[in-house]
Length: 282
Image (cartoon, rainbow, N blue to C red; front, side, top):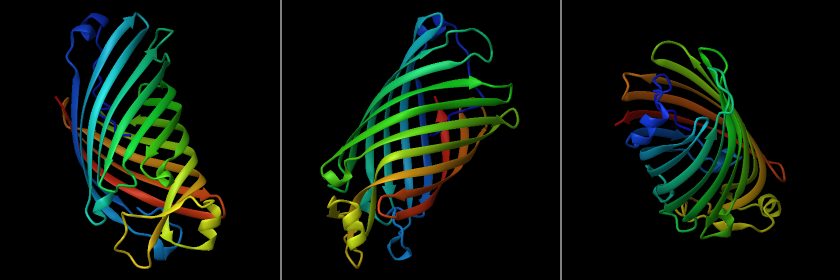
């Protein structure tokens, strides 16, 4: 999850929020994924680099003295440099409600959100949409440490049943302010549900996926032929990142995301995702 200008929050009164225009953010980034196939064996693992551009607009609407609602719309374009059929454009909308029952600098902010995202893939099998539900909390622990924690549920609909997944997520995040403009952050998360792995066809994967497999149209140029398998899995992940704000409008964000999945039938894999983003707020 990208963090925009962690160190430069602006606190508004309810009246000023009602009159304020939407926050508009843009980001451009580079991503390197060392296991885009989510495969276990070295022979099946493929890496790729991705160029990412995103624009979003967010509105904050006061409800009363202790709560507010927000709306966000975004468009995200991802272009894979080697496996081009993984490229996709995502158009999303999200509505959330926040409540802070008690006053004070360290008071807890609780939230619930619902989201919908249309996913337009160059891979026909992956083309589809996703709906999300999130509940969680945000809390300042000290002047320099902020905590976020919560639960999320994502359901994906796709043109191929193999790519139709349901996943739940538990997470806890910490932000550590290192200076006036610099923040180090970390996230620990656990995912339970479906994953899709792409590999050469084996009896082990056929049995573990209960026949939920299809020739993967994003990797047709590889030999031997690669098949996509939908598997039940548990994934543990950790993310480390640093956000540096140049001023109230510009920031740069670098992060490293490591995950390890244990799927049904002894199909285990891991990988890292490195990304670097430039962020601008209008």
